[in-house]
Image (cartoon, rainbow, N blue to C red):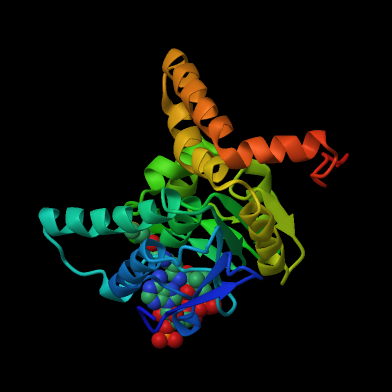
Length: 261
Ligand code: 1HE
């Protein structure tokens, strides 16, 4: 274990799902510098069997953001390095080895929302609320929020959240795109785990393409995007596993027919 405030549990018949839990409930899972570093190390050192991950928080809240008790006077250079350390850690989640599902409940605020935004899927239970209190604390986001959050909800909504301290409840959070799933109170982890198990069954190269190629393609000019897509598509379908999966479907052995929703 890299840090007392983080717990890693490897689950599944083939040890394919990593469950990463913030265990600092007494401080609402506020992210100290040590905890941010531990998150980075955890994602850098996941066992090779892991194909998907879930991240959640112990207690009544997912995460209260930056540990404000560590917010000290920093000169510009130190402040930049502090923010960059968050960037590195959260990039290890977004562009790490496996897709990550965030199981959200209670406060998902400040750096907690930045952490959730670095994940690939967000499941919010009905108790979840989202906010960016940085505006009222006289600071700015520093954990990649200004890059990732507008891509989920748009610049106008993020500006409003920071200028006015607006809090979105779970229903509105899901409506505007802060979460992709809304589930009854207390069930976010179960849903996130179910999704992670499903994701873990995909061909690893497809998951890699979705994590590493898709967000970059979406940022490229269309003609570059089409080219990157063609390359990624050719690589994915040439993998032996892809050929086997298509053969299984054509022979009626796949068991993964698309069902009506
Ligand atoms: C904390 C923190 C924290 C709680 N840093 N200690 N984030 C914020 O501005 C959010 C600040 N927190 C809150 O608004 C509330 O704590 C909650 C809505 C999340 C939860 O409320 P509640 O009533 O359940 O708990 P509480 O009584 O406010 O807090 C319980 C304890 O956790 C208390 O410590 P105690 O020793 O008095 O028991 C709090 O001080 C402590 N605590 N949140 C440190 N954030 C990369 S840049 C990112 C920039 C940001 O994230 S800024 C936004 C920071």
